[in-house]
Length: 314
Image 1 (tube, rainbow, N blue to C red):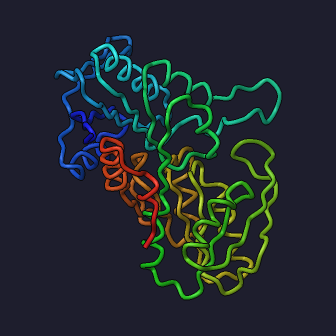
Image 2 (image 1 turned 90 degrees about the horizontal axis):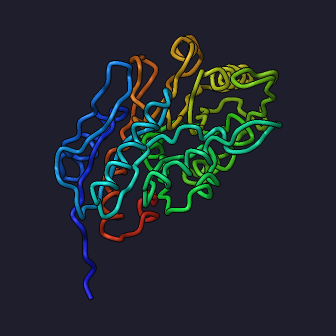
């Protein structure tokens, strides 16, 4: 019996309108008509301006700060459920609150678990996201999660640089598995920066495990926030005799003095994805688009195809 494919419609929240437009173009669709109404006190209400009854609905929205972005996504999912959408997929290029994935000290929240529960309670049947801060966050969801991997975007770019003495570096112990994927795909060595924190966004000490002398180092991380860790790691690596230092980070959170830290750093360049729109441009920051990857993943979900096939790197 042939598979039945429901009609799909793509909608964009206000957090990722440009990326959503590119995803829609890449998939040969147009974004659906949606209005975000605002009351004078700041309260907002999304509404679909076309019928979505019986359709598979893909709602594209990153949930970076402020948390209005998460609330907007929840309201869009709720509206789609109440409008009799057949299947609701939350496409979240950057899943916020992912750094709150465990109780690392007493009396703290596990924000990523709470966000997962809210999304499923609102009515999401499936979640599509990219490079979670910790892969085990998928276990917080009681619905399927398509976890896309930005390495298929970054690795071809790194190859195109033709760096003569390429070595991959993890900026901390937690990033070793991610960096190992890059090192294996590129068939190069890997080093690790071991850091000790005083508190969030503040490093007490850092050491490099491995030889970086004369090497072209590429640091790999899932996100970059204040850029304090990354720029300190880059300086330490250069002080140890590296030939050059670059960094690839999927999600450009870039808060506080991040842009200043990057521009004043020894980094040759910072390569990021467009999962979060940049607040400013910078000569040191290069943006690679994930629109094609998400459009292919959306098509595969709709056609009941494999998602893991998208992670093959030629």
